[in-house]
Image (cartoon, rainbow, N blue to C red; front, top):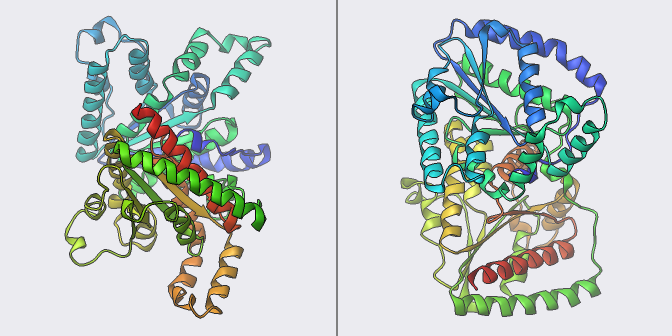
Length: 493
């Protein structure tokens, strides 16, 4: 979730200067419009970069009207606060209708106490449960909850801290910054789980890449502005993360797909040799998994004509026929529509030692159903959390879970469409709908970006596969399957 946000977003100084004047006007106007609204705004700003967090809080107080923005720093509990339940102070500082309360740092305080041993795991888990329930209660009551998490890679922070300590900016650095980095070095997985657990429906975390200060400040301000103006317009909270609806259609924003290599090719002779080696290895690993009762769920998504079927066939060629099932997911049947959308995936989970491969998956809720309007905004927004919970349960039960997005360029897709039309045994695969979907390419890019950012974890990772060259893609898929099985088998030892 955090690593996948590291896509290198930057904003040039000239562009920043052009954007900010109108952005500040819009923010203040939104505050004045909010004064007559029947809801308050609870704005959480947290992150793994204390200096960036301080800068963002200061920036919001600079760009907005401080008379209608109350800032509260969630530091160590005061003696008065320690006498009461943990979240008493949050209730105490709750914004009235028409106002904004900015809560700085609170979620990281909770995690830090747990990582240092001051808050035992069972108490920490109960506190997180309470926080989830609190958010749900606030959202149901009408409060607009906006949550921003600022992420800067640890190596970037360390470099900046060393540089700052040696120049005139050294006064901004203290031991807390180094301590935070050391603490999170071993606590990153717990932080990601905390962010996912507290991304409740109607109040998700927006993870914002904080490496570039100008981009960070504009992205934060636009996230706040968009959420408030959407709510004032009577629309439900969209809960966008950084790459969703923050910039105008004319802007070009970096997404996780921009980092996928589409140029690498593999010669046929090398492909044939490596394919045989990888399939032989997979065959042995799959037999070990069967004998030891390790189940696997492999999920394949990607563009139309990206080569999902071909990649899946290279996996199944290495498996015993009775050890796997391939499930091609189409539009739900009349019966399936009577159930929760995850029901049909739950019912097909594999028994011990077996493999189920999904060709299209539960992610249709946040992709095609979202883009085509088959799911209401509230439905696909909460689906991220539902999907994460679903996959968490698989992992906790001991399943090996791997997810693949096969990525091709629009030009390569068009070439494959045309080739299929001219191939008798493949022409049935092309319909008018396939061409219509190409017109929504940019919308799907944004949806895929959010899907990967909000549902990727160390235990159920997304593998973004460059598939312009089919040979390269198939080999990369097999490599990831083998590596994942090896890790899962080691965990069983």
